[in-house]
Image 1: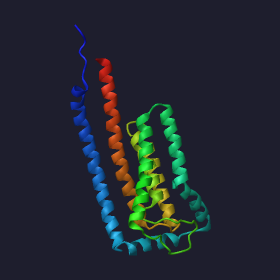
Image 2: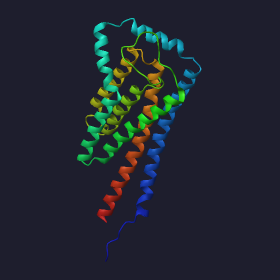
Image 3: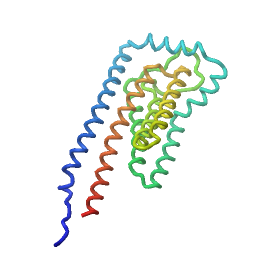
Image 4: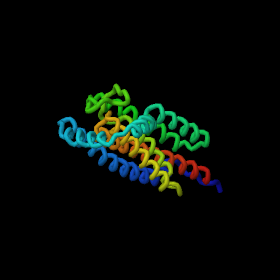
Length: 233
């Protein structure tokens, strides 16, 4: 009696329901965070955050020291385009070498998409950078949302997602949170971003990475399940 082969049509029904559920959940979370971003963007556009933004920046600057200046100028580069891109390319190459395609794709899409999204949002809002004191670093792009906040959080959140199902998830999550917070603080300390820029950057990046995670997880899971079932039959 010939072996029965499972067709793709038969396989995709249960897998499709699982995929839809995961995508809907990812979409709901991303939508919620995006709503927070849009609310904040409206408040910024209407000048509602100006007072609290300035007060927070001045409070931070009041505690500035020469030693801290040196440390922060160095530390902020860890969330910049060069550092994040370099780390991302190394990780992508490593995951590709190990044939961990989902992880490689998640890093590439998270960082690439976050960078492109930040570029577009800056042009859309055209918010000038704070000028409360002389900056220790030179920045020429617009302020809202923070590119450093978006890139650093995209990288950190992508790694948290990759390691979430492992025994290292807590350690990775803690390091990621500290990294995100550190980069955000350095931008405020240097006076090149308002607090609302940082928060908006986190929100935009979080929403994007959630979408990437949902799509990547379901796509690669479906391919693996289809391959496994085809092999068994």
